[in-house]
Amino acid sequence: MADTAQLQKVLKDALKGGKSAVGAKESIAGVKGSKGVLITRSIPPALGSKLRDEANKHNVPVVELQQSSAELARLVGRPYKVSAMALRNVSDSDVRLLMR
Image (cartoon, rainbow, N blue to C red; front, side, top):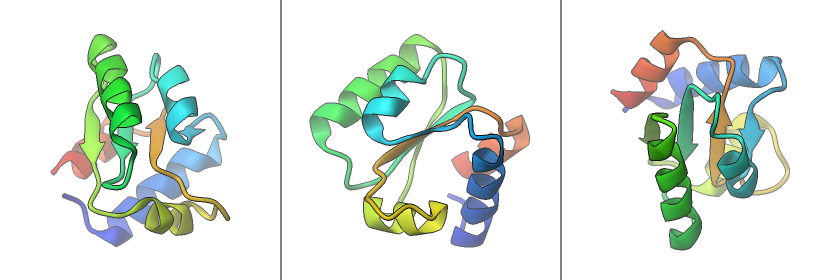
């Protein structure tokens, strides 16, 4: 698992292009074409399983984060809780880094 500094760098790069989906429902809709999906430990179970199923269907890796949705929101600079993200414009090496 990547540390917070590495996660923050990857998230900053992912949000630059503005194409990453932020939030569980948006991530479910935006899984297709994504390079990776981030899920926090505090995602509601029903949304988490639906997001994992959708990611498996499109062969997109899922990264289980140790952070809560409030902590992820702080990392991405959102004033609301963020329980999941679908990352589109990140490099493959960044996704591999998060999966460690």
